[in-house]
Length: 335
Ligand code: ACO
Image 1 (tube, rainbow, N blue to C red):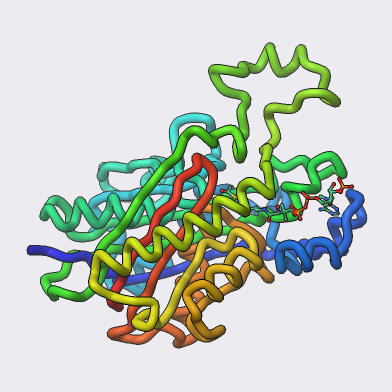
Image 2: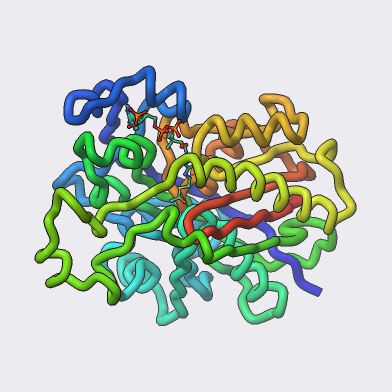
């Protein structure tokens, strides 16, 4: 029986720092409102001409993860790329990574599960490794939100929350039982698809229709979020799916060394922390610096926590995510 372990981690964020005060110069918002509601102080945005894109950032993160896994790019047998903001409508980001990294003609699979994208992606990678099909899988979560946000007062309820960045992990086959990824748990509830969505351009709202619409009235090409509804569902689903993962492994919250929640909103993370009676040292948050980077948020946070020495050999690490779809999931990892 094979298991998979995370053998390398990396992240990349654009250099361009955008503070809450910077945003208040282009829309009617302020530092106090943003910090009080979300915990966010600043985020990174790609700057025109800096050479970054969703795939380019993914490649930068991937190169670090591969080096730390102590393998070469030619050892990777599958790329899984999670994003809601691919460079192009199609094809996805995975094939661009394969090309940019000059890899062999290995398979490249895109996962479109928004904030749960990374947890879904490592679950897929884990299955391919457990069945013996692949030995090393590269998993990337990357987002270029700033390219598609409504940066006017009209879009402030959404645009202040999101930031750009990428994180990557190499999953490697192992024979050590009881170590590595112990289990993953995935869910969806499509009845709420429209509560956090970007509807067009799509086959339901194609370009001529969008151009014909009054831009002041109906803007399907900017993300829509029913913030309070998302918040209420998120806190319930985060708790459920963490409990599900713990119970599946006969563990309790007292066994958790490090919880890495998707960085949706600091208040959501704090709510979950209180529910599981975890100390500040047992929950990693970096939304203050990067905002919500959707599929990239967990791998960025996981990498930072590991770099800071907060994750050690033998620790129980729990990843949990909730987002658009709605989709949610958890991963229970013995480091
Ligand atoms: N600056 C100042 N005022 C603002 C801003 C802003 N950026 N945005 C909204 N407001 C105003 C609103 O217009 C409203 O004013 P009104 O009362 O005069 O109408 C007021 O602030 C309150 O707005 P609400 O939307 O009710 O504020 P709320 O307290 O719900 O906070 C927030 C909004 C932060 C979005 C919150 O609902 C939230 O965090 N929701 C969860 C979002 C989330 O976690 N998403 C994660 C998944 S993301 C993914 O999967 C891609």
